[in-house]
Length: 401
Image (cartoon, rainbow, N blue to C red):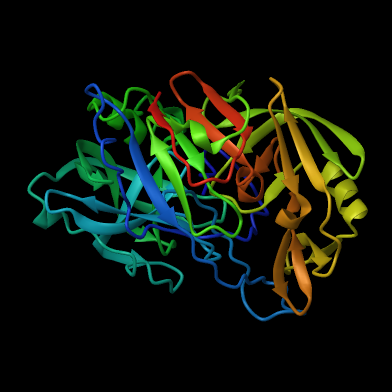
């Protein structure tokens, strides 16, 4: 879920998958290593049917929420994790989002906008936390899926994965149109604050309070049919990729964007030479419209207007051939191969949403259908995202970064 303060996308009608943390685990021996080590968070995968808002073919709404991993599950709406807020560790379910940078939770007295059930995933009562501190300023954010949240900035203890960080700044939202809170873990410069008022968000605080050595985390979404996956703060699992991790330079000051060089599909190489946001909070992939349309023609996907404003999406017959691959090559030489089966998302009545849609911006967004086939190390200190082809295995070789 990306804030439009750092990323504007008018047609973010994506199919999204849920990341519901069930039994977050820190493996024995990983809590501390030489004073600072890694925090490994396991996630479970749950898959539900996907819906679309293509009313003339299917009943239901297209899930528009885009989100990120601590515990991945295909539930068509969001990726979420279980955390605790306050001295009494009040339980909250939050989206873990690499596409934004702020943590916010729903206040116990919050107003739910647009008839959504914003309190179903936990609420926070600051009066019951002895460590709560109001900062006296206001937080406001609007995301690419047009959900919004507002409320006062505060500081308190945040607990997850068996550790607690103290004095963490977050927003205690008292009005929201989202049905789940968000933990953004992107760049500090991407925070939704007034100019010059940036603060230490979750990844930075983890480092400063000695839990990890670097402001870094690695992501392993596992195979498309897997039940588990993992994010590791401050570390990397060397058993989960093939070859070597290639460090690609981040090219934007406030987004996790690297240079995408070429996209190869059906024997044709498309020169991209532009930025790509590696966003674990988006299910589909979004690329430049001219290339998206050419690839759609090759795949026999077709454009359908899906709402009264004229916005649309590419769809494809679900019985379309799914043999072959799409190959992505990046600026420093990292290369990831994605099977075509990752681009077919059932929507009902024999129709599927095509997994490559046009981007409304000047950079691509590579979502989970790409990220499942890459092992990624986001290093915010080094300003790099290191990439290697994923290796689906239960083996583990975790080291700190």
